[in-house]
Image (cartoon, rainbow, N blue to C red; front, side, top):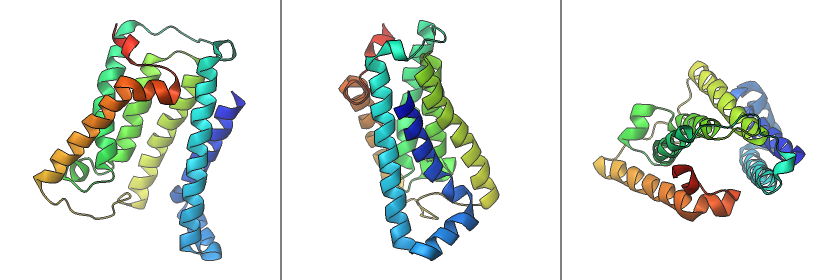
Length: 197
């Protein structure tokens, strides 16, 4: 459990920096913009790796991960369905498109959808910590983004036409299918397919 908690603190902690512009800008002035970006990326990657390792380890040792409630089967069907728009919105956050323009902050919507879907489908303590933390962070970050008036990783990038919308949907569906049919099992150690049974 401690590995998961350390990963969450590392990843979410570093992502709190952009929500505090004075602190972030002060750090950039001290070490420079490029070193800041490199450090931010490395710590984010390290946080994700530690989170995945910690969560995966808890799935392999259920005795260390108490079950708080047993979600009904229908919640798992909802979770599997919610993950499709979550993957499309995730892709929309990095490709200029009308989907990105319409949703304004697709990454935050994707994170909230992903977290909610997994909270619905899982009743163990590790899931509550992981997905509850990400959901709370995404809600907080959305409020912060609105106050700061920031536009996300693409800035004011304009969509280039319908082709990019198609590209976002196709890549999003591809990611969804890859996770559904083996990727989730390989990465986390749990297959979402039995949830459909």
